[in-house]
Amino acid sequence: MREGRTMLRSICTTCLESFTFQMGVPLQTFLDRLPVPVFVVNDDVVVQAANNRGYALLNKDSQSVLKKLGGIVFDCAYAQLPEGCGKTIHCSGCAIRRSVYHTYTTGKSLIGIPATLHAAEPGKMQAVALKVSTEKMGDVVLLQVEKVE
Image 1 (cartoon, helix red, strand yellow):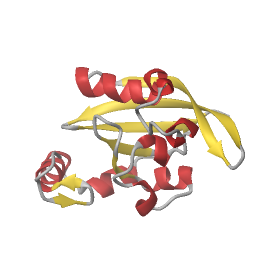
Image 2: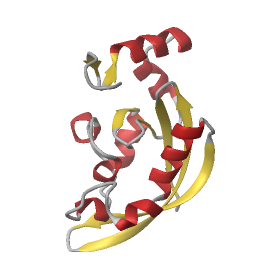
Image 3: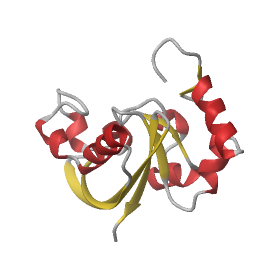
């Protein structure tokens, strides 16, 4: 998934072929069979793929999600600051970013981590309670996101 490799649907061909071989089904088919919203992200929380439930959760299509930083995808208010997603003082405490980084670097999955997203709404900020779970698969992390009602 590093620069210079041929890309297919945001994931390098080698990774995509490896996933298909290991799981026995194409990546998108696997993701869409999952009963929860799931995003495939890299170590910098750039979305590489998502399932239909993920797109529905965000009310967005693939063009608005793929190859974009998580803060942009999830409409994080802090991602709109001049420093940008992943580079503000707030980002160091982001449960989503920290969970992805932890799983990416250690290989250890996390389940049901509480997270608060400060969503950017026109003219205001709204706190959205989430639970996130992560699992490493090869060179990416599967990020499950659930809204807490």
